[in-house]
Length: 402
Length: 146
Image (cartoon, rainbow over all chains, first blue to last red; front, side):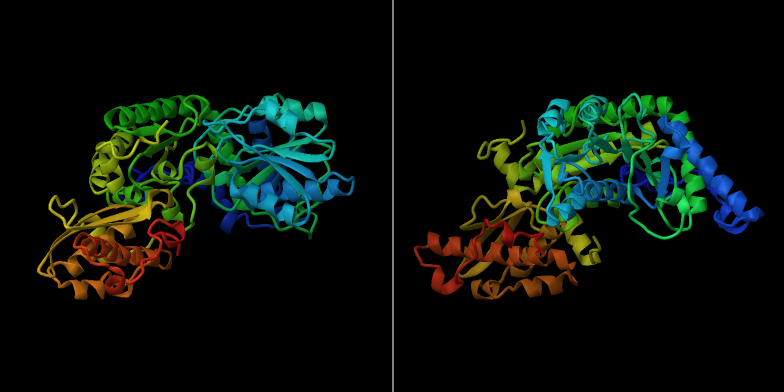
């Protein structure tokens, strides 16, 4: 059981609990070591040292130098900063084209939409049925006026992991900046920015047992990037604002723990993930896995249950204390279901019936089993009241699963 | 989504779920591509809705509005069932979140579609009695369109 009382929390792609070790690393920086890192007296410098220690911890996790790490307020800020500032800088050189994918997080997609309003051109690479793009697609989309390529490392909804090193190599040969939104990947899969040819990378602490409200941008040495937030000289003059010292300390501690435990955690979660996928796809008819079967985050399960709608599943799971997520429009209040699921070619009907379970470091086999047992009860119950399922059973409607 | 206790009750313990083999009026509204579809089965005798069942593919609010709508028309004369408004459905559920208001419209439409079907089967033009129904399969009229 998770520490949210009587709750089985299976939504770690949304956020994770702050671990006890991380919290204890952070606590001194609220009431005792509260100095401003920009102050030149003892307590200020103590805070400064803490920030620099965290910078080194993040750099070690990514395989870069501390000078290449810039702290931000969240993954979305990192995405906005690198995308908008690179576009604006290179527009002066006549480069007004950007490349991304159809399945990015909204922090990327809406940044792109904002740039399109300013007259930039954006290529949205389509994905295959597993949510994959290829380096060849990126190669073909490159133009002489391309300013930036941004491809997410691993997808937040379906967990698909992209061929980042190959895409990075293509960009490197073309001399185009390559950014990856690695918010879901950091702490989950091994990352080395040099061998993977990554020029810029966004991450967020709360996805790997760190606190909310702090993120970072890795930016390769020598890459010019105008500030998004102007003001003081913090972050080498590139990101103003008094440092979120406790948050940054938490980020540093969390990334160090996550990296140290990465292999062990990935092994455990991959087994858990595949067990859940196997159980649900064999025990229930008309269930399909969304995303790639193996090129996939160790903690991500995303299934579509034909004939039912996701919000109902979430509500019935919630009544049993199980937290999960869906790509259905009805749960979000928007007209369309998840853009990611639609981009993989899923029909709307099937996208509405999707469910994401994302496990965390503390998740147990018992929790996964309880969730499976709940779904083995909930899915048939919702199907029994669904006219769509009735029509599929009687052959009046054909199954839309592929 | 913050639902009232009444919505949660009708969602988790829906009344009158199923199909009616001897239904003489069946209506289906919504579109699975939009995420919701409601099917209403009526058995009407001597102008009274003697039996009613429903099946719904959709969110919690879609299931709850169909459930309470069946309760509100069961045993009622046709003209009374035709006066069932989406507002009455919302009130009976102690309110719906703003983005779910349209689910109640869908429930009202499902009842009207089933009554129209009944009249058609009787050889009576339903239009002057039931009125014109909105396009039953347009997403814009869907449950979760706000």
